[in-house]
Image 1 (cartoon, rainbow, N blue to C red):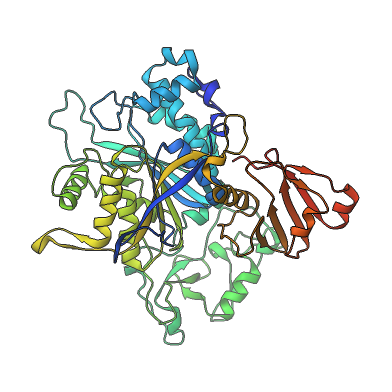
Image 2: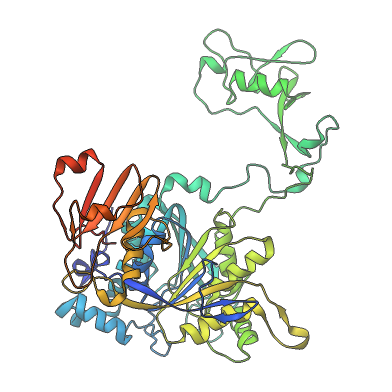
Length: 547
């Protein structure tokens, strides 16, 4: 498989593993009904202000392998430095990061090298967060599309490339000096190709409802149907396919109207067992045909599904590779309607993100992540979809710029509560979220626990690392973390002194279980005793999982 090399690649290829894990500091909660509040909401929706590399790392304990749909709109690297994110990847934070990670080589980087150094570790973390049956969509234009494809082939796997969706962003370009550029791309990958048929499930029936013109009073629950020729060639001969179908006049008809004997039977895709079942359940129709030598043709009934109320289920049309019913102008007008002024130059249309989310067959409780959140279009799209179908999809937005609260979060607030004036008033979608800032790293430069983050954040991290479930502080005092599936967890830790797991410390173990995982600085219990009592000792900080 072709791979892409650039200056600095060797410094960033594993950098995602070295990124500090930082705690998330809750700043406020928001509900459409009550506005801002000090207490966290239980919505599952998050808006995080901070460097998305570190923010993505902070999500791993809770969300690794759980994100069903990722959409990102990274800087296009056009060379334009007027955009607030700085599309030339010369943002002070990025430059500082490149200097620290890439070192002296960073002085010779072109803007393409810088862009690739910036994107590679972020895509690595997004890969870890993506569910096995999830998909990632990345907006990009011609400046980096080719490079993006190659590094995604490397990270996600070339077999997991799904499509290069074309998006028509505007109807014309009157100021173009040569060939007008009116399209961009949305590059799509899955995490595992095995699940692709599930992720992008298509309806097996026809999408043209006019074809369903037949009805059967005997089976009203099946809904309308059309008939299609069961006669299909193209398979190699098999004994199991050597059979005929009985016609109304008592004769047998064979596929393609030809009867062949002994081992020279003709070809049919449906096995005899399957056809027998279909005949018995009235899914097979044998009709007169002047085109067949036997005078008969075999058809099967293709039903349009109905629900349990006998109502037709009209399936969605196949996903098309061209999105041309939304424009950049729609995004600008939409934002102006929300803020009553121009606040963001390069936002994506809400309809575009709704279309992309709809590409993925996800349940109504799935999580959608956007780590280049910008003006918050992804959250807007999620709230719209939830309102339309009563879903409870969750969104996680990450934005590094200072407008994360004043624009990104503010937009979500207004969409949830409603916005606009007079006859242009837009009804609120409802919804809530929690706003976070990136806090201190959990480990210091010596890889010891950073006690400044607070013991509760440390305990929360340890619980996440062991159980991959949210932490709820137990009522039991001292060192108990919790119990999950008959395993009891204890974190014996003191800020100013070493702790030891010995027979005296065992007096602290009040909760009974089939297995015990106990963290401490040292252990003096005999190995035989630990094995007999199913005790697993983990040394602080050596045995604490690093995400």
